[in-house]
Image (tube, rainbow, N blue to C red):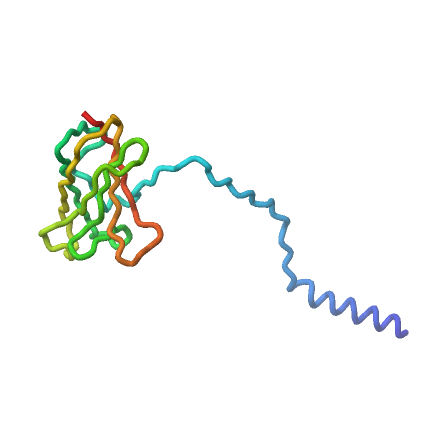
Length: 158
């Protein structure tokens, strides 16, 4: 009789508990995608920065390069870092990534306005033995973020 009561208690317990248990099917394991080993070009997907000059593959020559960009921070989900009327730095590099010239993008417009603002700089350039050059624009980074946005423009030494 004790065995029967024990068995009856277990059956009633299971009848009350089983409906509340959730069974999940076995899932196939997720295999992570390996990190690429080759250098991946950085792209500015939000397009808050538009480079007006120079254009990609433009031929340049000494004594200087005029860089003109427009920053449009009117979209709150997409912005380019600006601070104190500066929109970042410009570096001209040769194909070995040696820095040939640098400059700072500045404006005289109201840089706090929620409208497109034009920034520019003229950087002196003496020439190089390299024919392939790269203009790298890096956003202003007053907070010291580890990953400031950059835009690269390939150029040709004439």
